[in-house]
Length: 303
Image (cartoon, rainbow, N blue to C red; front, side, top):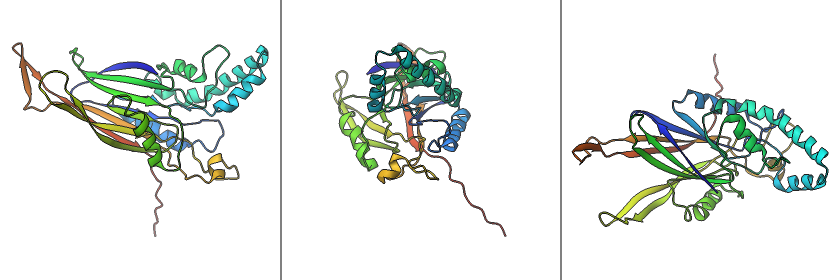
């Protein structure tokens, strides 16, 4: 698990928007990748002020871990063959780097996933993607401390996130939600919990957490526990004769999409603390989180 953070300097009236995406499983000339949905994600990101992104892994459709281990074992001791595979992966990866180029320099971080390649140099394809897009590498699971403050002030509001690629996939969205709520939420105290992998989309408030005050007046600090299971951009069912494992297994089709967290500082005018002869505004963070899906074309009929 990795730990990192980022501070954003915004005006009081401005809002920070964190776009969360993953599971593109991009492969050139593959009908399963929903390029139209990806274009809508790109357009919304580029048109949103103060937009940053967080990636949850599986950006490409390289071999899953079980098959990857077999391929690597088959070329063990053959440096030339391993180098040829590495070169081919790097060449193929240029396409996804181009697809994601609009995110360059605007990424909070990119997580690792199941579908990636481990190079003989010791790094992996997600790390290479991070290098190309100027992004921190978040590994499989990470904590992120988001700070929001003014340009002229050292004071910041803090929001914490636990995020990961995720593992396991159930038939029902509620079962995947329960995985996050029962395994990760109780063990790590944060403001937001995020996972991908299962391609199911849901944003919910699990419960209300009461933390007993350790100092100051007796009592508790109350805050909602927010969770997101983020969808992807890979269609399980496609038009044509090529059938994916989703279609062959008769699994429920999942809507492609992404998620957004919106964070804004709010200062109630009635709350002003006076310390050291100076006035200090007491503020809080206003949080919205939602899942997003591509627009649905409408058929129009004219006479």
